[in-house]
Structure formats: structure tokens, C-alpha cells
Length: 472
Image 1 (cartoon, rainbow, N blue to C red):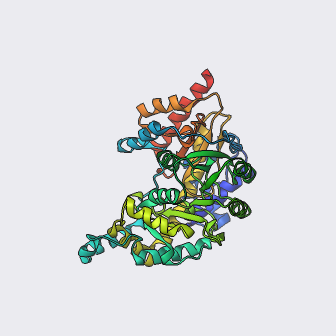
Image 2: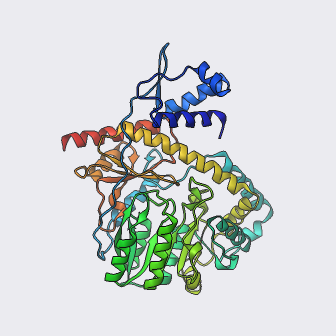
Image 3: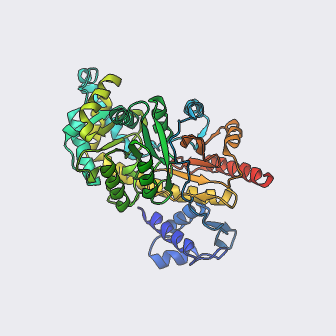
């Protein structure tokens, strides 16, 4: 973190703590420069960051003042889905959301797309160029089903950060985390089975379950601590559930990190009822805390946890490089891999392996964690400023997705149609529910650049929602 970023963070904390009150004049640039032993330009850059975040505002010939702020919105309450097996709907809405990626002029607040513009990703292009020039014959051939040995070795080393000890032979490389999840589901379930999921839950996972003829029980989930262990236990006692699917670290869409004690409790339930756990860790490396949180897989002693992840959210989704550690289901997972895609693209596997091996990946992760955490502060300020009172906003502990809950009388679905006409796309909450709940909620991607275009779109969204709220 640079000096001006550090100073901006310090001043922001003082504002949040009330040490500088709403409307109060801040110290002059010269006074802050003297107090902190930094240059005048450093103070000016720090003030510009706070101005971008709308924490302060300049007044001609008077200096900078704390911007009057709305109170911090509360976090969403524990979700309360229908706790019975249901068939999954929403495919048409999900398909429409996916086809919207082709609209180049749209502002994609609803996507799960990371920021791929940072300079720390450039060494990856150099690795790709070198491989194309010197290993042409290898990248044009088939790879073995479980992936390049050199990549699996690097993944095994990366997993040590989450306290997970595996060997390269325990890992199967996949075409992104999407394929890893698909393999995991088919390795443990059949048509007609029942699976438990968090609520809300990633729409891609639910559409896989729908395609495989599997019903789901949505389990109440807390926006700060994750799935309710008590509700999960009750569901396991009532229904013949085969597996539970979780995103316990940097959850999509709520952003929480499940406490270690709750991870252990979920694993204990899985052992007691003899079910599998499918752990989606695709955002896990983007946790703002360091070292990153442990996975449930790291606690697994009998191979019942199938861990799925990829480089799609940490590097770029177009690489299509993911992996699964299927534990006791390894043989079935290998069979599923073979019948679906066979081998994974060799070129990107080789490039990513070298990117990680040469130390570029950890530098990139450090940069992205800081970048997304800063974006979160800015986007939260914008949401608080432009959206109506009465909203609830999640407080992500990692990743780049936040969950916004509006008053129940507001239906986001028709609002999203109006926004689409203005090239603003959002992910309505009903996409992330098996039964179409959460029509008053949305998922927001804050990996987008914080520029005038993004802020204006968010302001327009807030104004439209405020109009609907006033007329309801």
C-alpha cells in the first residue's frame, strides 16, 4: 500500500469512527503534511481518494469537509427459504443473463467477471507468447485426462495456504470450476436425488442440478457466518439428502467467510449422516484476510469432501483452467471427466503453471485483494449515497460480489428490464433461488472500474429504485 493510500485509509477510519463528524472541516493539506511527515502531494492524493469515495467534499477557499452520510445500512437478516425439496426453475432468466455478455456497451453489474486489467497479469501474456513460440507441437496435442503434471504440482502447493495437504495425483484438472462442480455432482448424485444448498446459491450450480434431475432443499443462510448448521441438521433428519453444496469462503453472493467452528460442525454432520460435501472454493484465494481461511477439505479425513476451484476469478475466466480434488470419489470423477470433455486445453494449463511457478501468481493475488477491498469501500459508499433508506447490504470478507436487499414491496425484476434498456445489467436475486425467491434483492459486482460511467450508472439505478419505492 502506498503512502497516500495508507493515509486515505487512516482518514476514512477516523470518519467512520466519528472522530471527524458529518459536515466537519478536515485539517488543511499543510497541517496533515506536517502531522504525518509526508509531502503535500501525498495528502492531496489521499484527499482525492476520499473524494472519489464521497467521504469528503471540497468547498472553494474553505478546504475539505466530511460529506453528510447516511447511516451504515444493516446487513441482510438470516434467509428463510422453503425448507423442503423443490424443483429448480429460472433457466430462461439465467439464459437471458448469460446472453447479455455479448452486449459490449452494457455495464455488467450482474456478472461474476473479475478485473483483468491490472498490470500484475501481464507476465501471463509473456508466458503464453513464449509457449507458443517454443512448444508448438505440445500445445496442439491431447493431454492426459487428469491434466498436466506441472500444473497439478503447482495447485498442490497453492492448496497448502488453505491448510489442505494433497498430492498432484489427488487432483484432476478441469475446464474451469463449472466443469469441476458438474463432475462433483454427478460423482455423488443421480437423477431423483436431493441435495442441500445455501440460500441464496450460485445460479450455475442450481442449473446443473436442474439438468441432472436433482431436487434441492434450500437452507437458511446468515450473511456473515454462512449456512445454518441447525437448519441443515433438521433437513438431514427429514429428507434423504445425498450431498450439501457450499461456498464457505468468500461466498457467492453474500461474501461471508464461514467461521472455522461452523466448517467443522458441517463436516461433523456430513460424517454423522454419511453424505458428501461439495466445496466450491473458487473465490477462496481472494479473502481479504491473510493467511487465507482454511477449507473444509483441509479437515477431511475420510475423503467425503470434493473441493472444486479454478483460476477463473483470480486470473481470468477465459483461461478455462480449474480443478477438483474428489477424495474417495476419484475413480468416478475421472470417468465423468472422460465422458464430458476428455482432456483440458494444454496451452492455458502450461501458461498458468509457469505463471504460478515463477512467483507471479502470489504477487497478482496480493494486488487483487487490495484492489477489491478498496473497490468495496467505494461501491458501498455509492450504494449508501444513491439508494433509498431501508436497504440491507452484505459486508463481503473477500471476492468482489455484494448482496443488496431492498424493502420487500420492491420487485427488482421489472426494474431490471428498465435498466437493461439503459445498458445497465444486474443479477436479480431470484436467479439465485431454486424457487424464484429474493425478487427484492440483487447481486452487485464491484470489480468494475470506479469511474464516472460506473458511478453514474449506479446513481441512475438508485434513482429508479427510489422512484419505485416512493410510488409503492
